Image 1 (cartoon, rainbow, N blue to C red):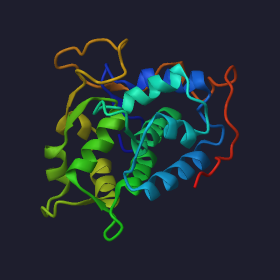
Image 2 (cartoon, rainbow, N blue to C red):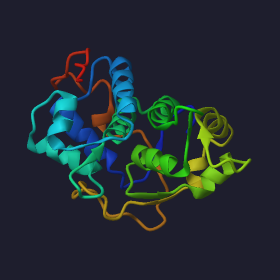
Image 3 (cartoon, helix red, strand yellow):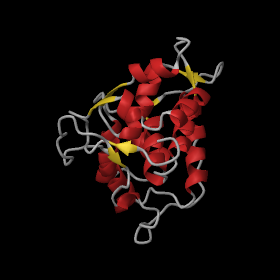
Length: 224
């Protein structure tokens, strides 16, 4: 995982997400610049939730049925509110599938505490379940393995070091459950004990597969 692509469960919701992103033209031309800008804006929001209208404003697009479908993927609590950080993580995965550590670095930066640049076990669970596109994820074994000193916190540096030494940690330490994930009515049912498969992805994930689609301007409009 550390140097290559994420290994996703066969029933990941990210495939559906990637199709919607492509059809709406939300895949940016300047991926790195846009993701960093999204990440900076999301960090400043400090976990503030967005409704559908605010989400559309954030992306500078009109409300549409496809945008509602994207919104529903992250509306896990069914309260019509989403954490924009989860959208940014998912977008990073589908836009740059071969840059796992860059996605994790971005995620840590959005979630980490100001005082120690660290995250909690609950925040790691949120990050990884979003990156894998699953409904629920037990990260307790992974967190304990990385947090050898039992501090209750993880920095990106510790995570990166562990991932580099244990490239298959997702298979060895994580247990996923994708039953009941909102917004994925067309996803196949999970196969019992199915192992994650390499994220080679469908064409929706390919950076070459955007010449038929409309893509937003490289610059991201800032909203106050």
